[in-house]
Amino acid sequence: MSACMWRTANSALSIGRLDQILQPLLAKEMARVKTDKGREEVVKRTIELVGSFFLKLNDHDPLMPSVGNKLFGGSSSDDTVTVGGVTREGENAVNDMSYIILKTAEMLCFQDPNLNARYYEGINSPEYLRRLAEVNINMVASPSIHNDKAMIDALVHQDIPIEDARDWGVTGCVEPTIVGRHYGHTNCMLVNMVAALEMALNNGVHPVMGDLIGPRTGEAAADFSTYEDFLAAYKTQLKYLCDMSVEINNYLGKSHQFIHPTPVLSAMSTGPMENGKDLIDGGAMYNTSGVAMVSLTDVVDSLMVIKKLIYEQKALDFPALLDALARDFEGDANVVHARVNRIPKFGSGDEEAISIAQDLIDFCYDVYIPQKNYRGGAYWPGFWSISYHVGFGMLSGALPSGRKRGKAFTPGLTPAPGSAEQVLPNIRSVAALNHLKMPNNIAFNVKLAPHAGDSHSKTLDYFSSYLQSYFELGGMQWQFNVLTTDMLKDAMDHPEDYRWLIVRISGYNAYFVKLNRNMQEELIERTEFLS
Image 1 (cartoon, rainbow, N blue to C red):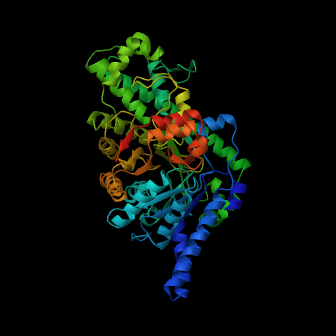
Image 2: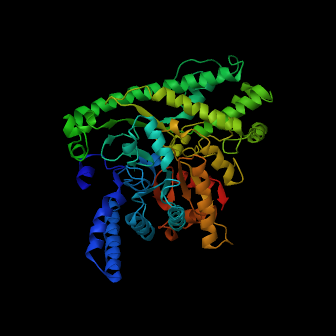
């Protein structure tokens, strides 16, 4: 592991399915002892060894310039560990080491490793799911929990053989890679979907930058007689950005092939030796590149406003909307803001908002999947944002959704704050989206606080039920922040009392007090649901 960190970028190294790696060693140790006391000592020693390994993962942080802190604030090296799910044969993979790893993480409560748990309904036990909920409650923000069936189905849909698809582990934030056989480059680029919206509203000009970035698609005030006309302009701008992202990434990849081969990592993978190629030259069994589409929710909510207020209700026209955006909804433009806020948002359960979201997901899938990367593999789209929803938000003006200038976008595939008063409509909306079209996974962030009057057992009942319902509906991934808004505000005012507090951003953990202020405010502004 250390050699890989020295030789390659010290970021998002996937440790793989640690419970599957260590379980045979634990079983061998257990077979040597004959008494309960002896077995207890083996378990204690195993926890100590796993804890020492986790300490090693936390003994360094990547150096980052100040501008990087605005985009990756609080991020560590984000080494990832995966537990649970099913075996290559489709059998229950949850074992003793799964629980030992969870217990060790719970005891230490570190930001690293980025712990991810796979759960397969009907094969993994309800008790295991309940334990995952309990560890989340006790750790506040970990592990991230994945619907194993949905992820495996998405991988098989990309022509990964079923046995290999079942053997996936998380890389980086939430992204799937086939353990030991796959060079996925899962975060090769993050695409700002809002930028295309602003360019469509301004005939190819990005209003904050002031430059003509995309193609000329028409003046909003004069050239879009129907909602479909405007949607077509948006998709034209988005496709332009997507195509440019592929072109630039392929140039960078070819440069990488020339100046920075990866012999150490290649030696640890299946494929390079057999193919006589370094991983960076396409030596892996599977060669893909992963795209993160950032801020889908903000676009959907904006399109809903345009569709409803301008084209259907005719309560607004483009000149009035653009004027309100230019004034950041201040002054008399707050009347427009009030109208905007009455339009249903994605996450409210509104079927039209879900339909718009699915249409854009389908569009991104159709744009990226046919394109080839510099190693000959496909581009896989996903919907998560690391912390770029904050950085990109700083570079954006006010949006038709009602979001103010410079404010953070929504993280991952999470509904915007205020979309619903209860968490269930959020669950139904996100789970309704087709997981087969998101092979690079998603991040669904929920701030869910236990009710003060509930016992620990009652709280576990609620959390487990929410998870069960979400996965039964087809949802891919869920990550919690189990805390209150008041706690976060107090941590901002008294950081010396909260050095221990980890939070989930959009795929990775971070210590709250190490985040920049913009990222702290984004976490505070997320909707707090009571369990």
